[in-house]
Length: 461
Image (cartoon, one colour):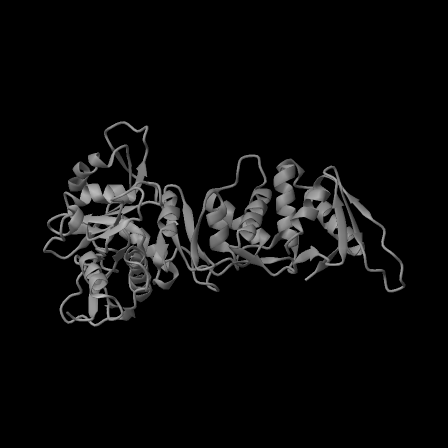
């Protein structure tokens, strides 16, 4: 037998080098991967060498090795979901998404006994809706006292793939509830609510062109992201015919805001603030998409290679759209223009708090300097007040006097643990004090910052 086994994993050919294995272990690998043969003529993109270990551990680790290699090979080529999937005889694929504990694996096996089994690990969806299967071995508990066994899907009674091109028909968020009635409940989920679950189960979304907007376009093409609440997986196969309807074309929506430098805020009057006060701009984001009913914007950012979605609601979308080197007055005008002047209430404080929240979330930047505690400061927090002291003497060797901080002053000191802008401090204080104090808060915070700076407790970065 050949010393290399070629397997198909989400559209990539992965070679498994069997040459260092015993004949018995090599046969065990072939048996476990029997349902994932690479197409004739496929060229491997990577070669995997199984770990030298006992057979059970080797097979388990090999499954992870191939999965990681396949996901890496598909980076940027397709939307890769940590998801399960089944296919109808005409190739319509229902994709099942859910974090660990939501019943995805159990559901995929109950469905795979009736419909074509696509995967219980990773589903890859191309820009045109084509689905790439991954029929890797399944981890099966045969003996509760022993490690899981790696078995080919067909070995546990799961159906083969249909003789048809695989196309995405539905994206389903699974929600298993032991207390739910026997009859499953299907509803179209709000895309803004669904995006966080979908992004958290996605690999390398930031390497995909317009990844967030692709999800929105796919949701539109498939009739919306579905949510299924159910009690027992055995009740799910009856749902598939209604879910597995042929999708329409996937149209990726345009960005919801104009490109940096093109936003039209120049005609808005600056008001009494003057030309030298802070200007605010959108921070760099991987992607964003406009949501309707109500008006919102979903923003994708990447932190430590992990995607994070923030859905902006209320007046935040208007602020986000207008934030292109804009003053606070311009952002207030943009919010009023979009949503109207609130009855009997000044829109300024609400916009200021929205700006602060967007800055706290890393979605908005300002040209203000940052304020932070000095490194040569010691302080004690008694719970009722904070006493802080600059340890380094003045140039004339005069020692500083301790400062006692209570109430909002103590809060501001806590907020200065990380560098922040004055706008953020004012906005946070306003949230605590309430909008009734909007007239006094800015001056009070500025005065407190001036005092802390004079006492050499904080510095400008």
